[in-house]
Image (tube, rainbow, N blue to C red):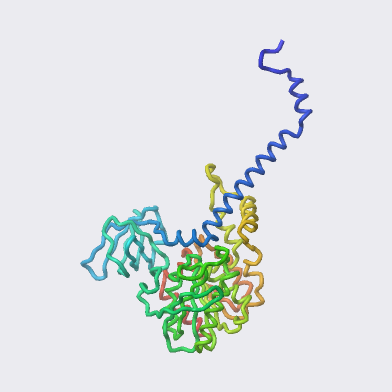
Length: 404
């Protein structure tokens, strides 16, 4: 006799034979749920971090403190500052020249070094606002210039450029040369990305236009509300180039940072004015959006589980993003159409870049060979080559522009 609550072994075996599809079906449902739910979740993450203009602007404007001011010595010259890292070892990201943002001011640190105990020391220069008091939380800023070019301490004239969606703000640094340079920022949606280039270019004799494009503060919104990584923004850059030519520039030099590199590349592929480009300078350029997303996703973890994000799930999330947000992955591979690039390029890229992989710049240099000069910066993070050695960066730009 069987005990109550049990069933004969032969009955259980007959049930398994009768419904052999139950276990595979359950497994299929679990796998499908994982990929559908995971794909939706990570396509939303991609949208929030890289595509949605409102979200990207908000994230950039908000200060995310990673250091705390512990001492500001106002007696000495230069002024010495000591910071305490809130995020542990910041490594090379805290070395060289860095901007410092706090709630009501901006400054610059030079000669910064991080000790083993996480303390960071450097020479401090106040750019705007009041000096921070000890205990003030702040954020190191690789751009080293405040968001508003008016506050940057540069001699820049504001002007308005008429483009495909309306009026765009821009700023012009004067010089005596006949060739204008145009600086294009990245997906921070802030001209501050490239302000470091203004004194370098003006010192070399290039009137320098600091450009904006759609979705920037003060510029028109893209009808989609999305960043398109060059596929629409190149038209805004074309308006900037057209202005330079109309004002007497004989040709132009383009400089693009991060996503700004993608905007420059899209312009070179699509604009009739690309023939007016004398040379191109790129800093950590986003040359293949798909590869960049894959690289960033490789450092993501699955929520709750803490396991690495499988590549197959990344692929599903990208497929969903293409359909949900109109991302055209193939068109965002600027390495694919190399025959259109017949000008010279100078490319800076940090070996420790965790935002845009240096491998894409290496591939670009291999594809175009003698047309590309690649300056790889050991230990530098995203757009961090200038920070580690501003003088070497300036000299490389001057040598490049003086050689053609």
